Amino acid sequence: MEKNCAPLRIGFIGAGRLACTLARAWANAGEIVVGASSRRAESVAALVARCPDARPFNTAAELVDQCDLVFVTVTDTAIEEVSNAIAWHEGQFVVHCSAACEIDLLHHAKQCGAEIGGFHPLQIFSDPEVAFLHLAGSSVAIEALGLLQLQLFRLASAIGMTPLTLRAGARLSYHLAGNFAASGLLALLLEAEELWEDCGFERRTALLALLPLSFGTLNSAAQLGLAKAVSGPVSRGDSEMLKRHLALAASRETGDQLYRELLVRLIQLANSSLRLTPDQVTELRAALNGAARRIIP
Ligand SMILES: NC(=O)c1ccc[n+]([C@@H]2O[C@H](COP(=O)([O-])OP(=O)(O)OC[C@H]3O[C@@H](n4cnc5c(N)ncnc54)[C@H](OP(=O)(O)O)[C@@H]3O)[C@@H](O)[C@H]2O)c1
Image 1: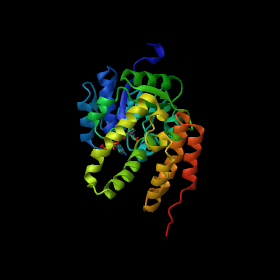
Image 2 (image 1 turned 120 degrees about the vertical axis):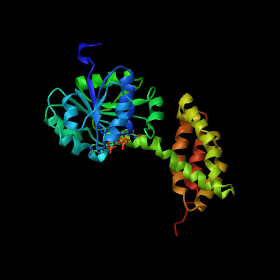
Image 3 (image 1 turned 180 degrees about the horizontal axis):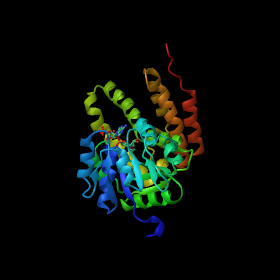
Image 4 (image 1 turned 90 degrees about the horizontal axis):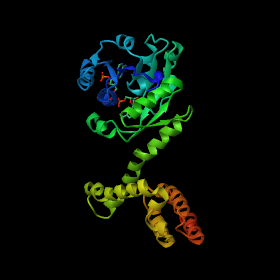
């Protein structure tokens, strides 16, 4: 290990789902997890119970005093206030784990001489036990410079995560990308659920029946890339079926605009897969542009 990357004493302010998971993973990997502070003693106890050598701290100030690297893992809206209340000092590293918030929320720590950064795991932490199993193999977006960057890369690798450099100023685009990839899928499934009900099926059976299609598509995308994973009428250049789908979408209360926007992107993907002839692509685009739109009363 490089001299600069000597092990750090790690602490967490805010002992929630993410902190419990990361603390446990680093403790398991032999890193020095000093402990945590939080609003409630029960939360701190839950974190400490997962890390053999960690201990609870009554206040953030006491914790910070014992640490080289502090993760401010409180809810996003509390990060700035929590950081502002601490007398940080030079030589310390202070990091938050939010996707959306700028690193600058930790401006007070920077003013005090600490180095600040971001460490955002691309994983869902709703259940720390499940998240713990999925950490290895997940990516983490790191926004930091110099020694802090080296250390965060090292810590990510120590628990099997893939570190990525997130450049300054890209955080909002990064967050939106994540939103499309995560909850964006749910908006599409909501539309599919409603159509499912229109078929006369019970709505509660929709996800059971439709999700294998989603998983199959996502698996294909993981293996082949987006363009080759496209299926359905667009992938076959079937502009007649596209017109029928568009007419149905225009007759419904929702989904017309959504379907049109999706088709623009799907045709772009099918075109880039080189499976369709230029004429087929032109016909698909003509079907899309020529179809009647839903009239909003
Ligand atoms: N959950 C995810 O899937 C996920 C994924 C990636 C990144 N993140 C990021 O990770 C960070 C933590 O999220 P989380 O999901 O772990 O949240 P969480 O489970 O709600 O935990 C937040 C913790 O912070 C504590 N806290 C809140 N306000 C505080 C304050 N003013 N002073 C001290 N402690 C305070 C809470 O206190 P008590 O429990 O002590 O009351 C709780 O333990 C956030 O920045 C979030 O954006 C979350």
